[in-house]
Length: 373
Image (cartoon, rainbow, N blue to C red; front, side, top):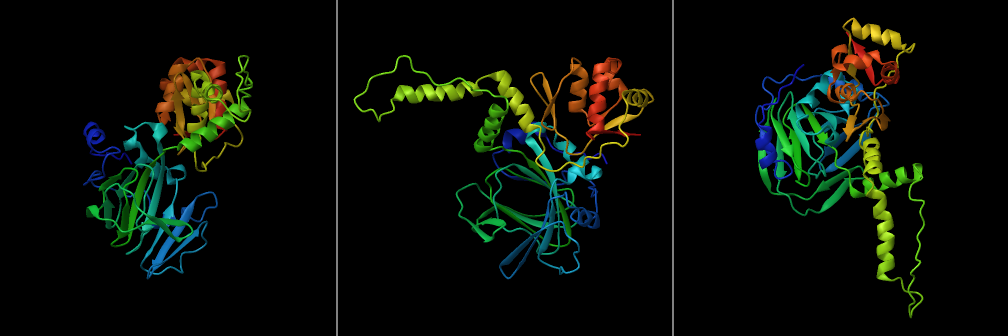
């Protein structure tokens, strides 16, 4: 389905993005759920898919993690099933991500879908990333507080909740409504009836993640082999003292590694194009030959990108799932990065180049793209 989000993006970014929460009433007109609760339950039974059940009874919270074998033991109130990265596994659901591509691909993370019965929710909590929550079938009551400092506690080892807060948004949402919540705003939602919710989450790496990821890259590429030197070493009264200029020199050694644009860009492309969740990879058997791919494309078949696959460009470099793809055919690579579905006309003369065709064949045989008639 082609989902259309009724939003003035320029106004939204100016007034709300990372500033304050807002409900967009009927953001999706005549909203149709891309999957049923039974289909969601089926996904939660798969080993490769992250899922959890959250329930509460008189203030006692319980959390269990999938894969699940059955849901027959559950009652009719106070529980919810949450399934992560559904866009990786369910193509109709992945279509819900596309209206949000007015924001850059590298910032978009995944689609979490939850099914909750009356009273179902995960309690009041904070997220450290932006999220758009789309209401599907059913009604859900949402409360969102203002940004501030809140004490957090864990009523269960797998849950982190916040203390009660005063709401600045206190509304019921119906099918097609969209709630945007910036990082750091406390919120809680409880279903009024059996309901589906779709959460488009955004990626916000911490400084710790960036430093750790870049350090791994430095080691793998054997960068930073230059050793500290001090030909103008200063005499000092106290041999235990480390002088400020020595600290500065050490800091410069480290920051010089980051300040190499070519290396930094290459690392970031690899780092940010990696998916945080499993992909539904199904390499074709037997593998395609380059000639077969050429013929299929020329006959009018199109290539569909695998759900959840991250294809990004940093400067003039292109990356797929943590690896750089190299070709002189920049226009064709740009099409693979920007378009979910690609045809022969979009790839143009690149298909006549055996080296590009070999690259495309390798990507298809890795399961990253597949033919869709």
